[in-house]
Every structure is written in structure tokens, then in C-alpha cells.
Amino acid sequence: MKVRQLILAVAVVAAGASAVSTSAFAQAKEQFFPLLSYRTGPYAPNGTPWANGKQDYLKMVIARDGGINGVKLTYEECETAYATDRGVECYERLKSHPGVALFDPQATGITFALTEKVENDKIPLMTLGYGLSISQDGMAFKWNFPLMGSYWTGADILIQAIGKREGGLDKLKGKKITLVYHDSPFGKEPIPMLQERAKMHGFELQLLPVTAPGVEQKATWLQVRQSKPDYVLLWGWGVMNSTALKEAQATGYPRDKMYGVWWSGAEPDVKDVGEGAKGYHALALNTSGQQPKVMQDILKYVHDKGQGTGPRTEVGSVLYTRGVIIQMLGIEAVRRAQERFGKGKVMTGEQVRWGLENLNLTQAKLDALGFGGVMRPLSTSCADHMGSTTARIETWDGKKWNVNPEYFTADEQIIKPMIKAGADKYLADKKLTRRTPADCQS
Image (cartoon, rainbow, N blue to C red; front, side, top):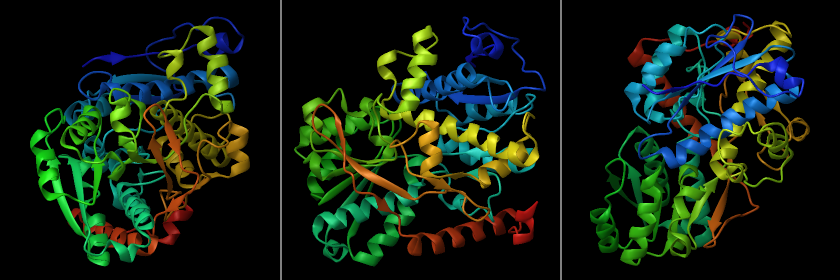
């Protein structure tokens, strides 16, 4: 297993000197962030900027703030290559590290494998925009936090967007919508929601799985050409996305009738296709660009000092920004926990879990953190481990992404009953019990 480990000495960096390495093992007085990543394999072009954003934000907080309320921060990266077994190995190796805060598995398959483990280990899982959709139900899933959206909210928003384009959801009756999806837990996750929406609005749903990693899709797009769907939803990751767009171009399927999930809407997905992807739409959880204050701070405190994890030009790209958001949320969960359990103290996994469950990132707070315009306000609770269910649509113009200013909000009247039913089944299958309101006070 390839492990990349970068630990910076807070005192030296905060004083403005060059960063140096500390011991490979964090002391008990330091808050530790395990960083699961994949810089190798077919998903590396997408996994790398995501990982770089997380790491650069940590470096920036260390250099600018000296940590969290005086608590030093350390971290260690562990390479998973997007493989579930390697992800579990990374988790097992890093979970006992002193001061461990939380895990961001960076893969739905790894999330599924760790969900039962964290229940026993009392370490929270943060799965921003991915993972187990029913884990929004915090009364059933105490340790899972699918912040900012799940694949059910994403699928719901895409159908809303298509319905609006058609002049109303009632206009979807008789239409055909094809889901071209990564044949994995990630790709299969939106299917129940799409099936529910198909039943509600009378459109035909065609399911076309693509074998990972997705470099061979000719047969899939021949099926698309034969069935002539009104719209194609792309649920891909890594090389699968650019391959799908190239095959759509080759078979003549209009790219402006294609809508991707937020993991199919970054620069690596379209840059090699260029004009061939013009008109393609995707969900946007966040903005991109180097203008936001948080990106300026990363450039100032990290890249200007030669400490950038990746190239300077990558700062502010779609997935890099998402990595920055993820790490910010982890740090703010620790900060929130300190408000209850003691500032200047290292938080346990259980205390960080409480912090994640009690986040309240108002617009004023986001502005103060440098995230104004980057993301929407987010507020979690014991019952709601997601905190936000909105997204926008971005469109590729051949050279850059243009984000539509309109926000769509997932319809929780549809989603919540499905989540409750799925969570209750999970609890019954695992012989677990639902939390009570009294449990939320502890």
C-alpha cells in the first residue's frame, strides 16, 4: 500500500518560516485527520485534485491559524486506488491513531464497507455528496454524514431540471430517460429514486450499466442510439465520463440532452472532449475559480511558500474546491465540538460526531471563513445528517463551465418517506434500534 504522509510543524509555519516535517506519529495533544485518497489507477485524474484540495486547506489552516483554537493539526494520506479492500485497510491502520477526528472515505463502496465498523469504533464518516443515501436519517445512522446531498437528492434534482426544461413535470409522461451508470454501489445508488419519479410522472426509465472503469462503452452507446431516449443521465466517475461524452459524439447523441451527477461535472471530464462536449449539463454542488477569499488564502499561505500539494493552476478547480469544502467541514466540526467539550482540547471521534451533528454554517459564517459564493449555508441536526439539499445546473460551453444561478431543492416529501423506509429496513436487518430524542441530548 502506498502511503503519502505530510505532517507540518505548526509553530514553525505560523512564525512564517519554512515548513518542516514532524514525527510520523501524532502526539495525543494533536488532532489527526486521516486522508484516504486515490492518486493511482483509472480514477486518479479526478481523485487527485480532490485530495489536493483537502490537503492544501489543512496546510493553510496550519499556516494561517496555527491549528484549531491552539490545537495542532496533523494528517496522513493513505492510497486506496478507489478499491474497497484497500480503503478498508487504510481505515484499519489509521483508526487508532491518537487524536483521530473522522474519515472521508472518498468512495461509496468504501463507505458501505465501513458503515458497520464505525458504529463500533465510534468514528464518524463524512461522505459529502456520496455514500449511502438513507444515512441522511441521523436517528438511524448515528455515524454517517452525507453532507450537502446524496445520490437520491441529486437524482431528484436532475428530474426536476428536466421537467422544468420540458415545461413541467407532467410533460415527462411518455418520455424515455436513460441512466448510463457506473456498475458499482456508486452508480446503482440513484436507481430507487429514479424509479419512484418514473412511477410518479409516467416516463420510461432505461438502465444501462457500464463496467468499471468505463473505458469501453461502444455497446452501451449503440443501445442509446437504438432506443433514442429523450434524455441521458450520466452517473460516471473518472475516465468513464469523458469516454461517455466521446461516444455520445461519435453516435450522434446530442450532448445538450445529457445531464451528469456532480461527480461527472468537473474539468477532467470535459477538457479532453472540448467542443465535442458543448452543451453537456451536470449538477454543481459548488462554484469554481480562484476568486473566493479561501482560494486566495490558500495561494498566499501555501502555494506562495512553495508548499502546494499540486500545481497552482489547479487551485479553485471544481474537484479541488470540493476537497477544500470537505476539509473545511471537518475542521468546523472539530471547532463546533470544542465549543461544547472544551476549546484548546483534542476532540475524540464521538465528540467530533456531535460537532458534525450540530453544524450551523450561516451565510455570515461562510463569508467569514472565505467561502462566500462557494457553497450554500448548511445546518445539521440529530435527525438530519445532510444539512442541505440544493444544487444548481452547470453547462459546458466548449471551454469552461457556466453555472446557472437558479438553485433546485430536492423534494423531501418524496425523499423522506423513502429514507425512513430504507433506514428502518437497514436497522431491522442489522438488529439495531432507532435513536430516541433523549439520545440526542447526550
